Length: 419
Image (cartoon, rainbow, N blue to C red; front, side, top):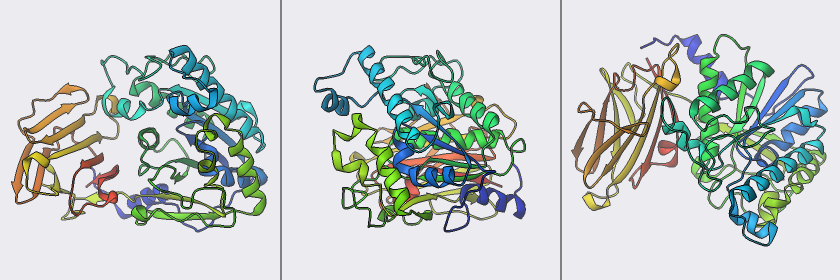
């Protein structure tokens, strides 16, 4: 495992959690806005986009999916069910056109907008399971197994992790951004989580070959947020209560920037009609950007949920009760090692239920006798050898289930840095 010196730690923190209350742009900036679905770039960062454009900065927008899995919104918009594969793909094309119109209203030309065309509501499953020799992921509604959009960056690319990571790295190396806006790993939407994770791996892979870049994650999906719902341009957008421990930045918006954001959001008719007030709830006096700092493990360090013990990673979960029937926990651990092909690194899926411990590496059953579970009262501790994780430098980790004394900040995807 690598040793982290203080300058390296500070450099990593600068990438993850930019310093400064107000984001400023200049004409030399190259701003990349990554959106999980068409409309997320407008909801999460349209004010910042407007400010960057007005400063003369270059701005490119990239959508991970075409948002073709939102059948309820399509039903309301089209006034009839849209369930066929061709019909859903046509709606994905319609959402692409909406993004082009929204960004045109902000002064961004169509040739500065790209679409990757990966499966809406499927990219987190791809990140956690579809790498290597596996069959491609099959989209839930379109039933596609490869990118079906001719305008996409890699038309016909199979729905596997290598395809997405390759496209994101191609965007990064081709555009060389100085600033990146991306969805937040604490977002409740799975594609929002996945895009952040793919970006993080791509940036790690490209360390040393790109200049300094600031990463600003924006939040969209949190239950009951923003409140109150609706267009309230005189109100501040406040951080969700359960996520206040993130390192938040707030960017104040002028009246012109709020108006521009409202105009951009209004182009997404296919999404607005399902819940007219909702999208405009984000057009307020500020925009929020925040991220978790990495958790540094080793030399006696732990954060309570994760810790190192020799050559093993320990995850300690507090059950809501001691009843086995109430036991249902899932842990994802994706190892990363510099210089190693990420597709070959283990991506563990560990589940604990009343029948015991179940382990997979991607979607293959893992008979890893060395992964163990111990119990003490309501505490469950999973012990994973670092060898089973591929002797990683870093781990992308996530825990979910019925827990006690575990805040959302513990259970969301986190970056573990191992000394």
